[in-house]
Image (cartoon, rainbow, N blue to C red; front, side, top):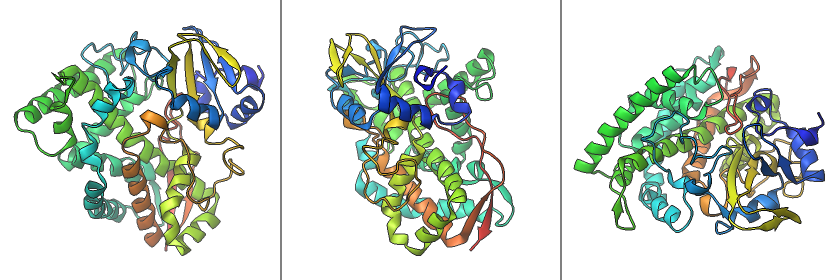
Length: 408
């Protein structure tokens, strides 16, 4: 099978590594590529930056709505958002079109304002320091467990008004939500039903407590949201809690993990960044671009149209491959190069258009703080083993990063 016939839906493909060479050939020769499915009608794969951005700006023509299939390759209106068979799970706002998408989105914006983020910065820095205090410098450590996973989940716990120790069950639950194709995260249907039962029960108690006594946290904002005169149902609260947990965790976690792997391979970049700390603000954008933790999002055409000269039929699935767009030669110079000094680049690691990640500034802040604290303590990263990758066509995840941190 040639790289032009690659099945981009196959989760096993990404377990072996990101297929950057295949994406590059598709960008050159077939940028709007028809990908058949063994269990579906097939989809159009968009691999160029320009086309991805253009489609993302047209929610009227390219829908994310649940009733049209939602934001994943599989049809959400046929399969549960969590793929668990749990009928209680409602529609997250990522699977809504304007104007309802924006109305739901604005319910949590007060929890993510610039003023709120500035107020949180010192606590995020303190948590980062506490986590790294427990890391023995000069000895082997899994940086996913030591830093990359707990840091964003501890931040989420604060945003949701939870005790800090809740990060551990949140970690377990989010792995199950994103790991629908990974047997390590979803061992069998009975285990997934048990996980969902735990999560639903916890969410029910949280929903009821925040409805009864709302506070200034995001869980309260969601539980008490009113859109078009209707209060948020428990099912939609549940769906949006899954979205908040996955969105608030996976991007930051995997950007940290992939960046440490890249820094081990490119120690000159770390030396230079430590010597010029002012570059950290824009360096975090390269970290997200190069890692691209969320590989794709899906849209559905609401009318016959065309993309880059290719006819697209009403009802066709269109999958936006961020992992390819962020390596597009027409958008980035030497795109495969890991270069923390590119400056103020416009990557699509957080999406773009109406659905750009609402927590992108928080993710960037956590990355900046994490690597600022690491720069104070760590002279170099030594990778001790090849990281194990998620079996997923959606999350570009690393299960572990076994490293040695050489003390500064």
